[in-house]
Image (cartoon, rainbow, N blue to C red; front, side, top):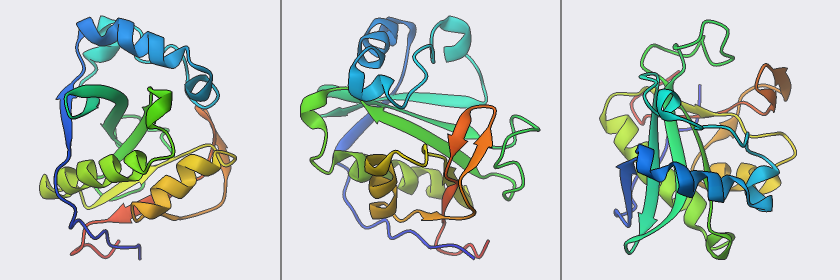
Length: 173
């Protein structure tokens, strides 16, 4: 059983697919201390990673200003993924706010909610995420977006994670 998301917010954010032309912007954001603390600095690092069909990468903008990166992925794209046992069609998400002046203003949970709405409309029964267990800011944003922890912190090949998930309203898993 998992929490069912309330997707009543209006669309404020624009999500456009990340492109090769965005790599310099992503590298700039990833070089910033507040991002580097929690994010692997080499992802996405090249054209091949951007083209990986398992992952959809987004540049998030508000009022025409790009300020964040988000990705969603099939949790069944890697047999050893820690979310592999979630129902078929489930998605995983990761993101960061690249612009420091946009942090701690509620944008993280707000654009996560907007993306969740789309993922659920597209049929995902569950959306999961895996922040570092010590990343209190990310965990709080996920909780505000409706996520709950399911399981204890664990070590994965991507590092330590706290598994969290939210379900589509009519899903019971």
